Structure formats: C-alpha cells, structure tokens
Length: 256
Image 1 (tube, rainbow, N blue to C red):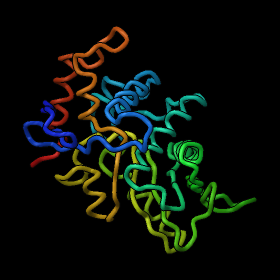
Image 2 (image 1 turned 120 degrees about the horizontal axis):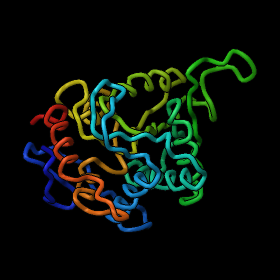
Image 3 (image 1 turned 90 degrees about the vertical axis):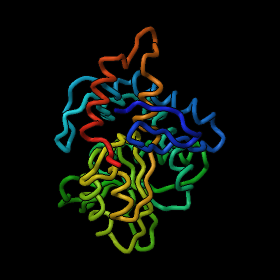
C-alpha cells in the first residue's frame, strides 16, 4: 500500500519502504514544497493528471495516468517549460549542450524547456528531437532542431517513465549521432513503480545505462497533496481511489 508518511525532508516511505526522490532546490524561484504543490495542481487544471481506468504503454492497468498531450495552449507550455527548467537546473545544472525530446511528446517538451532555460536562467541550450520516420527530402535525416555532434553533453526530456521501455528506443537514436555523453533523464512525474525487474524504472535506467534521473514530482507527493484534501471544492483522491492506487502499488510497486 502507498500509505505515506513524512520521514525527513527528502524521503517518503510506505510500509514496504518505497522511496521517492523528494524536494529539489529551485534556483531561487519559490519554496520547493509549494512549487511541487503548484505543479500538481497545474496538472489537474490542465486535465493532464487523470484518475480512472487506463492502460499504460507497457500494458499495465492503472488508476492514474499522466497525458502531457493535454498541455494545449501557449501559456500552459510556457509554465510547463519553467517547471522542467527548475528540475533540470537542480539536478544537472546547465553545463550541457543539447536537450533531446523523443518523438512525439518530447518535441514540445524540449522546445518549451529550452525556451524557459533561456528566459529564466540566461543559458542558451540547443534543442533536438527525432522524427518517427527518416525524412528523405529537403533537410534529410531523423532529427529536428539542432544536430547532435561529437563531444556534446545531452539531457533527455520525457513526460513520464513507467517501465523504462521508451529509453531503450531513445538512447540508440542519440548515440548514433556521434561520440556524445548522455548525462541523464528528466520526467515530469516519477510513477514510482517497477521497471522490467524488481527495482524502480528510474533506478533501472540509472543502473543499466549509467544515467542520472530526476522528476518534477513523484506519485508519492501527488497522493500526499491530494488525498482527502479538497481542491477547488472537490476531493480528487478519496478513500475509494486511494484503495485503487494502493492495490496498484501492491502489484507494481518496488519490492524490498
């Protein structure tokens, strides 16, 4: 069960000691705890964070789903880019060259975040994304935006990682461009569930590929903020939904 309690400023755990990465500093924007709450509410307002009955890309039936395709306006993308920029600054700094967004959802994420980094931090990071099909006319190739060159340091930006399957598709594309250093992966929500084995998907990515990983928020933080607490006059996560989330983590949560 995902029954969470506050253990310290940077660790939450349930009865099975599911650990989550917690508050990251925000480079002088706002208090991190409030920033996380703001982002969770922002996802609710944009209808990006949904609760119900869904199936993930990895085939898991889940009571919650994050669909970044529902960020649909310029102002929403601007705010989203700023949240990503804060998470990137806190984990990686800006000593890298390229922000790579895997097609399709990673394309607007890489654009929005690179703009936010430029505007908020005065750092000019190149953006790059891939096409699903290789273009055979005009500017031929598989990439959009900046080319990736030998010696480049790259950070990959995605929406969420469930079982870690998408990174297996993305890394070969990036590494095929040259002798590059892929520093890590940033996602909007850490779903805190097992990848292909018994460890969390993000831990498996770190262990298998040597990539650092980070998220704007974790599902532990989402549950803590929304469980039996009204938001705009409505309780988003009530007891019934909490039971469904707990059951999901009994099945797909990290085992210790």
